[in-house]
Amino acid sequence: TRTEGFEDFKENILKLPIDELEAVSGVPREQARSAAIAYATAPLAMAFHGLGVTEHYQGTYTVMLIADLAMITGNVGKPGCGVNPLRGQNNVQGMADMGVQPYQTAGYFDVTQPDIQERFSKFYGAPVPSEIGLKIPEMYNAALSGEFKALWIMGDDLVQSDPNTNKVIKAIKSLDLLIVQEIFMTETAKLAHVVLPGASFLEKEGTFTNGERRIQKVQQVVKPIGEAKVDGQIIVDLMNRMGYKQADYAAKPLLEEICQIVPFFAGVKWDELGDNGKQWPVLPDGTDTKILHIDTFKRGKGKFEFKEYVESPEIIENMDDFPFILTTNRVLEHYNAGTMTRRTGNVEIIHEDIVLIHPKDAEVYDISEHDPVIIESARGQISIKAHLTDEVKQGVISTTFHFPELFVNIVTSDVSDSIAKCPEFKVVCVKIRKGNLNQLN
Image 1 (cartoon, rainbow, N blue to C red):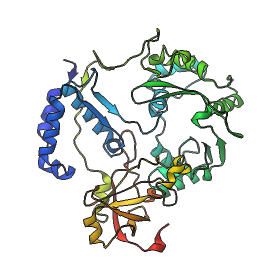
Image 2 (cartoon, rainbow, N blue to C red; image 1 turned 90 degrees about the vertical axis):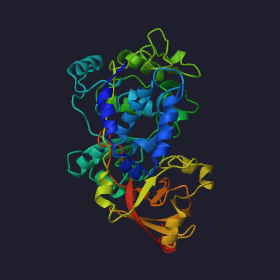
Image 3 (cartoon, one colour; image 1 turned 60 degrees about the horizontal axis):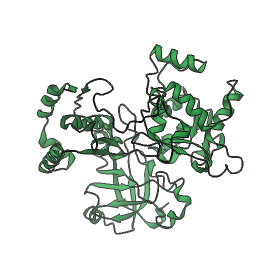
């Protein structure tokens, strides 16, 4: 009663070639069947997914299919169920809420709609963009073609963390102006024309919003060090210099501004967030929302979307010459590019990236524990120490990219999700061979 399109969806599902999907996934059909029955028959079931789902060529469609499963089984709009994305950083949700996506305003409105453009332009007293902007991979291509001239990066080490490192560096060096706002001199900051010293989270005030839509207060503990400034103040300073007058940055008045333009922030007040914050939508009277979709979905009825599995271009184009699949991961002790964690005691626990190889694959290539391994793809090659483990399947190797000494992303592909443009870090075609010690970077 709350959905549409189920019969067509079901018909497409029943046409799927189970033998082929079993072979591609490596999951025996009986295990898939048992998992499906366990999920469908549970009184309440929660689905969680992270970058292992989204960092694929069809990542967006996979998320849609997870949502389809939740609707089929009624695991929506009740306590203890739902689809729960595990966000990669502490304020990814908050950034999306505030309109960092190039096709949406703050509050998830379509930037191409005339009524939305009029509303935001009137509110801010200045024209707002009316066309969809570029996503990160599109920025690189536009920079290389000479169409994209300037980039202002805040707290992101693209050179180390984005795929196909050599292409990223070439694109960044093609810019007329690169501004990097950071707390450390990252690999990207080293290439910048201008470096703006930003502040860490303990040096500023504002809010973070997590994956359960919880708006949490961040309060300043210490003042920014040296010439560093709070990120919001840096933006305000530039706005003032460009003739758009603003008061100094402060969290409370900024929240008051947001409440006027983002409907689901309507009742968010700085002094009422307390220790645990509030979950949006927050009504004008301050009441927050613990559970979404209790009676209806935002679009009215939930719509079933069937998307057929399509092999990644990386596999189609490169698997014959590069028969292993490299998939990148993270370790508990370090975060992403290691920009912060490498500057803590954690580096005494794990001080280098290593590659996980199945013992049977290692035997074929005469690779022993800690031996140097050359990993080569269509983009380039790196040398890295081996760790033999059955935590990876045969034919699959895995490593992190926490340390800039290696630049693991030299070998990764710039194939990205067809909709979100999220890079496909989980599927990289490579070949391996035993190296020698002087090849280790």
